Length: 595
Ligand code: ADP
Image (cartoon, rainbow, N blue to C red; front, side, top):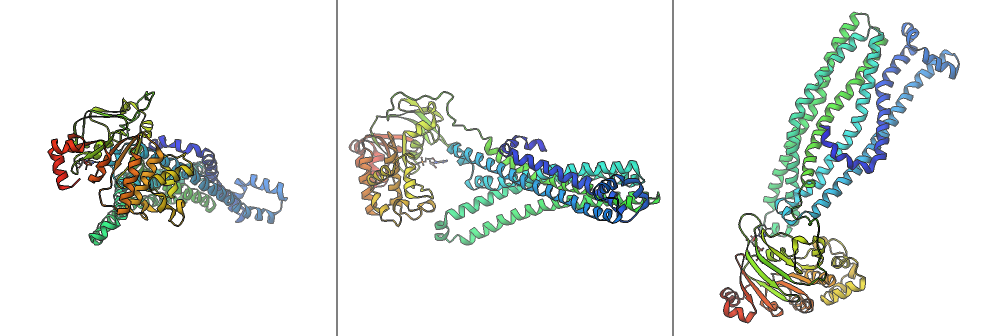
């Protein structure tokens, strides 16, 4: 079970120091509890209660120490004996505190490492990964599963050190007692019951794994539902979905609750079962011991040692449950960490000497799942050309442009940028050549200036402003309360669609990439935005190879050639005038003025 955690120990590496201190402190705690407490009761109680028989046998060393320190005085001996009790507890407490603090510190550092690595992996996995996994579930893995894992690492590493040491200390003391006095019968009977304690641990453990896995999957679904509901306040209100969403949420919460409860049920069962088994063992031992003349002092020492020995067994039992739960969390994180990047960079990436903005599709076929979305696409686009893409919704226009930056990869055929297959490019280099203006641009929750700088992180403030001016965005940004420092707010919600698209256009200006992909806003923008975007685009498309997914015929006045798509095929390619004559589908779209 522990080997499950081995690959993750590397996350503890940055925390080696606190982890080591934590372990040493744990050993101190374990020894103080397992050995110190029972030994103390064996040595001190006879002195305090003047049990002559035991006093003569066991305490000369302690007497010796006290005599050297305080002189051979009965009352001082009494005081020193009493003070020995808090002294052991001081060691134990300091060990416990340092153990808990440093092990938790190490756990938190490890958690940070796991989270950062999973996040980094998620940032690099291809788009197709996001088709297969819902964002809420991924969110839950980074937040919940990583936390569960941390809790397990913390509980595991703290208890894994302190409890076995305590147990070993107590057991060795018990064995020592067993060899020197009549207490051995009690010890023997009690020890015999220890293997029995494994039974409830194993039984509950089996049940726990399944339930813990299910619980974490359910928490994933629950987070998914939550994220989805918080991301679509508008739809939920306008379609009066509140009640339905609340019902759905309640059902998911209840399911998580039921599974959690069943995890708790089995987890909580472990300790009490061990206690009952232990009590029987103890009773049998006591009976045998007392019938054979066990003294009270001997009994006290055995009782303390047994009590202390059972505590770690209980805790280790509980720990096995916690570790099983952690194992389930690891599985879910591993699924992300071990995901193979199907669109990884080539071993020996190439980069043409001279970058040109040419784009070529050769016999490209593509499907997201089973049904083909692009069929036999072949087209050559010259450097600096402006291409309009038209076709009814679902024709495959977005898919076509997504293949250029290798967001997805052709199933057969090839896509070339600057004369080189996109699979031979390092993705980072390839994407550096391409500026993208989406239909609904995302603004990150930071200042406007930083949002524009996404286009080119090393651009100066002046360059950012210039790009904003070219995108006709400078005016409205200046009018905002903090100008360029205004926060864009969650998903840019304070800005209109037209304003957001102008910010995205400013990003594209700033990027100065040789290829531009623009998905025009489908819904009508305010007329001011519309005019300004049109004007901005006129200068943006200069000297670049541009693809515009057009939703207005007026935009097509900017383009050199138009690609008409229908059901995944190119059904027309040419200028507006030639297509009106030669392409019935285009003619039809034009007549109805729908794009
Ligand atoms: P357009 O941009 O012309 O509206 P798309 O390229 O978005 O068309 O879509 C082409 C086809 O591919 C549609 O049938 C659509 O349902 C499907 N499709 C688009 N995106 C995905 C996706 N991420 N996963 C699965 N199918 C998709």
